[in-house]
Image 1 (cartoon, rainbow, N blue to C red):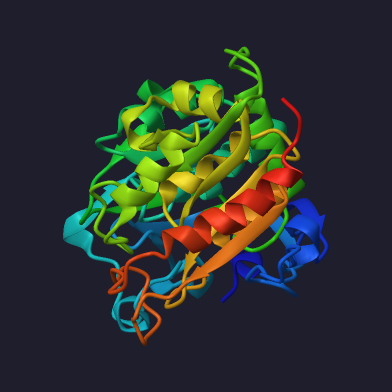
Image 2: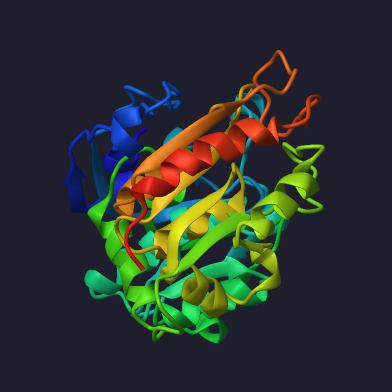
Length: 350
């Protein structure tokens, strides 16, 4: 069963074409270095809002069941065996009252991850707003981080009016709204709706200074994909006048304000790089790409914001694709600074 098969109504939100990557200087620097993702092209997609009836949501997997069977399209990066074993559990079932204003699912099972919230939840909120569902009762995590409540408010939604959900529970709906963005269907597509969502939030924050920042986003204590000598890179960039930030130390509003001022943002795969969506078009995005996990998700978000991209491949010593493994090799900082010298020729003016 597909979502379209079981939906009582389907609203097409946007149809987007494939878009080729936009790389700094066509992906080749004057001294011959090349960017990763040379011939990458985004995926075409048709993205919809569905009204589902008489379905059950498993909160832990964030997978819907219809007539007791999982809707596989809603199984976003889940273990197929866990999905196949999923059934309705009457002892865990919570019935969501059917009101005039429908309930709406707006987040995936990684809802506490900043990247996932920005890429899946914020476009969904915008979709609800432009389709006249501003008053939808959002199914929300029982415990939310401050930046989640803040971005809800900036999107025009009140977290206090949502329906808190708990892991281990299942939720039965007479009627519920669900958008393709929640299940990652737009993760590798250039979505004008997503860009409009980010621009609407960015517009809530007045300028705090000129567009004069070169920003390095530190991984800091994060263990996933850790670079052993990141502190040395931070020191070298600070000596060049970079603002080095740990995005998690700032409120949602502060992150928007900081990145609106960027001429260049630099970092590696991680939630902090999702702040590229607040940048003005033309800001250059310089990503340090681990050789064992070459993921274009940040590239895509930069494309949506109109940012030219440069990706430098980092040898890590890891042989297998692994999105959490730490680098076994230190970063060649001299090589990074050499490429940075050339990339800075392409920055927008202050």
